[in-house]
Length: 416
Ligand code: EPZ
Image 1 (cartoon, rainbow, N blue to C red):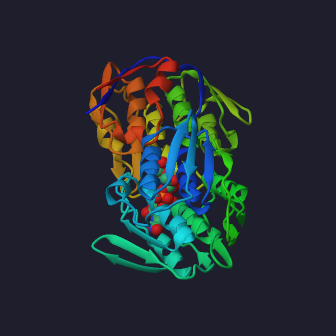
Image 2 (cartoon, rainbow, N blue to C red):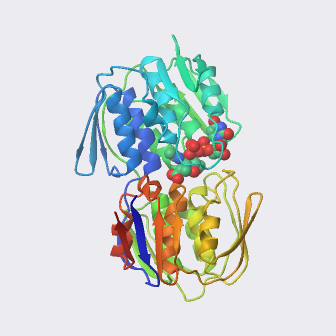
Image 3 (tube, rainbow, N blue to C red):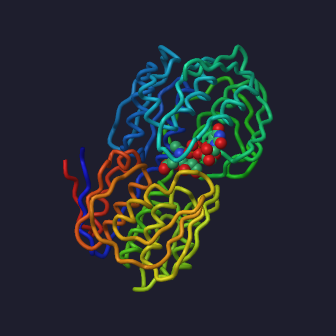
């Protein structure tokens, strides 16, 4: 079981290029099933979740290969609509293959998805929407069977702006009959990127980025060459890493406007930032002022930055709190940070960072993707050596966190 070993106390300084977005590229890879052609996805991150998605599409009959940082996907010939259970259980976003397969062939068989254990993570919004689009759904022994003889557009009011459900509906609606309207749609930049990709393939979609998305079904799509947006959560992770070491970093190849909720909080804490369209320069005074964090759907503070922010708040003198509104079990790093000496108490969906404590390095355990990344950041500021176990969680979403942080001066290595 590989581990990361970090020697704390180094100030991060330097320049980094940010990789393509995991949460944009996964639905776009699923969307290639709709175009029955060859698609080139540029700036595709080489992360475990992309590897799993590739394996799932290959098992469906697609031919896929890498050309440097470009993924070439040939979806002209599908051989099955049954999704491999062991692969689906490795990743939550496999559920959006439902919408893509409904649009492609009107049939799909999938198990309940896996992925980060952040709470119940039901899929009722996905299934209810597909049923409204004339999809018959039955569940037997944990397997979900979907089929339709005629995929029909519908008006869907989401009770919560679910990212995955919004994406699933967009994928199914793209090649359905008639018009679909999604009310209370998720507004994340990854939803906009999915719309841009599908429109480039010939789809008729408008409204992504707002709460109402309109999709006019079309019969046929074509393959394209498409560049995925940069990963706003990875960019945010490295900005927070620099801030907690009171460092100075330049991040290139980003979309600054996707990071507004994170950067505005860092500025309220006292970080100085120069924000250009595709670059951010961050520098930090010795003292940062704690802020309280409340996670919300985009454009609110992203839940995927919550764990990283918790570690940064541990370096501030003021008592602060974090209210997690999206997932009921996203405070798993608290017990690990307490092993390092942090003064954090959790009550219901609020974590209280009670006072400043210098963290001490020890052996800790990653339990989910973003929490694992946050524990690596804790090692950067801890006294002595920190070992982070179960790094497989982190490798799902970070192409090379060791190389990136080392290039900024961190003392971190992987121990096989
Ligand atoms: C996406 O997950 C992201 N994953 C998550 O990032 C992110 O945390 C989340 O959106 C929120 O921004 C990908 O894009 C691959 P949701 P998703 O559906 O789609 C409830 C990461 O670290 N809900 O918006 O699963 C759900 O339980 C990952 O990169 C239902 O109740 O999130 C949760 O409380 C972690 N019924 C809330 O909605 C449903 O049918 C938000 O979930 C669907 C969701």
